[in-house]
Image (cartoon, rainbow, N blue to C red; front, side, top):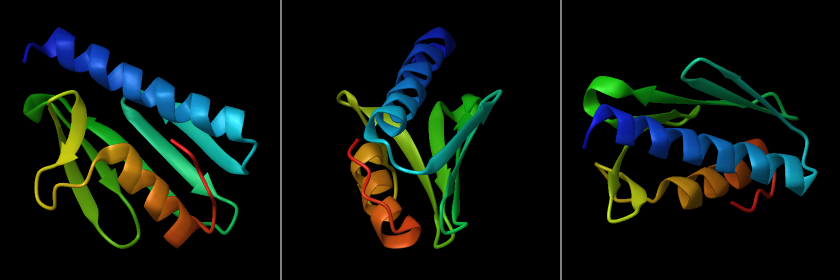
Length: 103
């Protein structure tokens, strides 16, 4: 994958996450500075999503663990456990952030 393709795909997933949060009406503060997106839930839990450009990955850090997602067959897939990024983010939002977030 070329860097330009990675950036386009990462931009698209960041935008999708932000739009879903905005449209859902849930109380999640979403702040993006450079390549780092921070989601802060009403209960104080924070998730950090960042781009790992040299590896062409997106990393998600939650209070339980960190996950590394690579783009495979049209989806961002965790390279250790096989979770899809949006599904995993929604599940962790419910488990850790006490928030239903449809992604």
